Amino acid sequence: MSDARQREAGATAAAVVGGTSADGARGAFLRAEGVSRTYRLGRVEVPVLRRADLSVRRGEFAAIMGKSGSGKSTLLHVLGALDEPQEGQVLVDGEPVYAPVGRRSYRARALDVLSVHERRRNRLRRNTFGFVFQFYHLLPELTVFENVLVTEMVRTGVLRWPTARGEARRRVAAELERVGLSHRLSHRPNELSGGERQRVAIARALVHRPSVLLADEPTGNLDATSGAAIMAIFQALHAAGQTIVMVTHDATVAACADRVLHLDDGRLAAK
Ligand code: ADP
Ligand code: MG
Image (tube, rainbow, N blue to C red):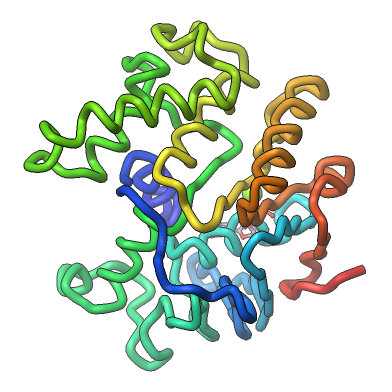
């Protein structure tokens, strides 16, 4: 598993309370500037992102379309502080996510845990972003309620958990009610449909009130009806002010957003 995909699983298990307080309402809240990401397969270099630019304002619902293999997941990982680009920068509320280009490692090293940018990325993954992925990443041995609660437990930390637990349980219950799963709280993931599993993942992504919801093909594994239900949830969230960046290869799904960009040959363009 690549570093980013490992962190993808970690990001869904990690978590904290409250979003960012700084106000980036003027201008872009989430910005990619000239990001390039190349994978190395043995001696072959596979350029995936080629100086891609993106600006997302607070409250916007942006969809990024592209064919399979066009780099959508890679872009979402770079935006979500899960994978470091070789060139360019990502800014959240005007603050850089990655170290200056010359000081990047491309691979986590022990000392990176202490670096200022790595600490900021950890905070961003836990507080600022909520992640939804195509394959849910639920923990099979936990119930629906526990799957969402455990992220709050990790986010809060063991010392604060005894006093935070009551409020966290209320928030988890409210979030699962919002996605229509109040009658499934004690079920385990293998007792749920795909659409229901994705709704658990959405509740988990939102329970800490992230500034930005990042979704990677959230309907990619679902039939049309379940997919439409997920998009109805996204549109309700957007109407309530949630900033959303979603990647998809499906034009019908992308049409739910208020702006559609295309990822083509490693760059983003409106069409
Ligand atoms: P998409 O999400 O649009 O299907 P990806 O971002 O997953 O595209 O992948 C883009 C390209 O990069 C694909 O050709 C894929 O095979 C390649 N790729 C993705 N991850 C890795 C990796 N860890 N190592 C090498 N190549 C990768
Ligand atoms: Mg993908």
